[in-house]
Length: 611
Image (cartoon, rainbow, N blue to C red; front, side, top):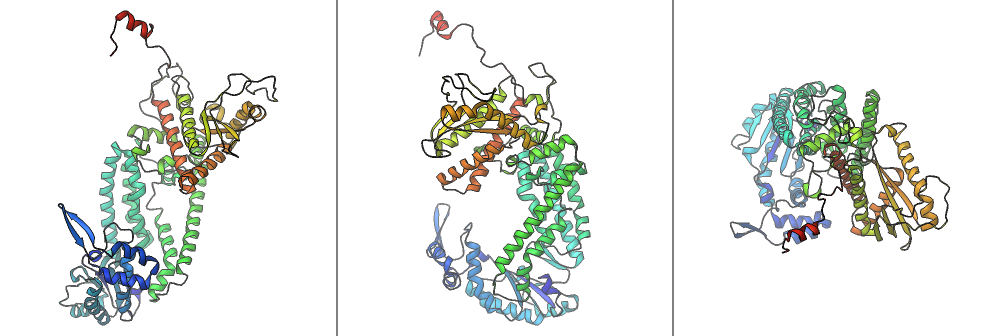
């Protein structure tokens, strides 16, 4: 619309809104149009709308014979197809744009009045009733009086400053400035309310910000046609509110400095939180939107209704833009990581591992186990970025000075074993769906004189592995064993070398202990499942869970990508909760008898009746 309005031949633009449009659509006419214009959708639309819809109000049934049903995913398509003949009958009078019930046109004032008259006359035939009170004409200053004279008596308002259209501003720089500033003030008020929620429900507030709230300015940045520097200046107050109010309320930490703010703005997969900076993302959002929309804008400006290869070209541009933006984020993360302290660099690398950040990107749905309470969410962020934990004890129950490194490793209280067993049980539960004879902690066959090449090999008769199953890697009768190891990457022994080298070290240790015995005595395969407490996986574990996801996806008839992401999410939350329990849990002694005297003896001595 902006480009068409800037044309020297254009004197004004008209922005039309229809009354109760989706409910007033002529259903029978729309269904007949669908048969001709879009036969592929005709059958399902006919089956859905050929009979009146039943609406229940106060126990009474009302039959709805017109319009589309609210919430129907096909409603938008049906409305567009149903009103397409109306738009075609208006062709040639003025340059026009249609989006659902919002129509617009640009031309000289005389033609716009003629276009409006025809729309008012024939629109009701299709269930389109133009509302003059909601319709606006934006005229160039020298044509404002002519527009007022020609549209007199129609109820249409005339403006020379600007108007709102599809959520964005059209008009003078002053109008756009006032529009953006008003939106920013509104967002700051909403952000304050979100910050208040973050103080008690940080996980829910974080999800609301990343999955919805930041989309408000993302959309505006894509559609507003304004000077980039002025736009960034208008967004400064919003960024200050994010840094000074929302982030401290969310994390329980002080307002971040520039370096940490840039880190938090990165996507979760790169070690950030996805708390985008509206100022730094302004130019990129605008450029991406213009590049993707260019083929469609060209056709609209030239009133070319033939799509041709427009869709495929747009898809190609989207893919290219997405890859370009992804490459920029990767480069930004790499540059930022090189400026961070060594320990934070290590934590950032751990957060960038596949599956390590799925707990952040999942919606906090409690019934699925994806929700974290206030303290757990903030502790999780402290573990992710190495921030100091609040209200921790000075010494562990074992007498050692308390630290995160020690808490994740200390065996007092049985937390490392619980963490290990949780991963084992989740894996075994999934295996029962796709494998036969799944057993937890199966005994290995006793040795009868066999010897092994590695001195660290387990040769005891009481040796057990975590899970055994049949039919996972090969045929139904081929047996396989897995053994889980969850290591603490912050432990001193795991800080040397790269992460891949640490995973490889633990995998080799497991293989030296069991691989030869499993192959030569059990005649089976062995897979070490090595994982870090942050959710990363070793090479063998990655291969194993990919195979498992493929089998589960085929069994449940869902896509592989959905299944592998779901498995990673389940494992990520399990490891995260185990780590938080290791930090906050009471390390009481396990398996200590609560009573010195057997229960049955006390019952007999006390002659306690049994009900």
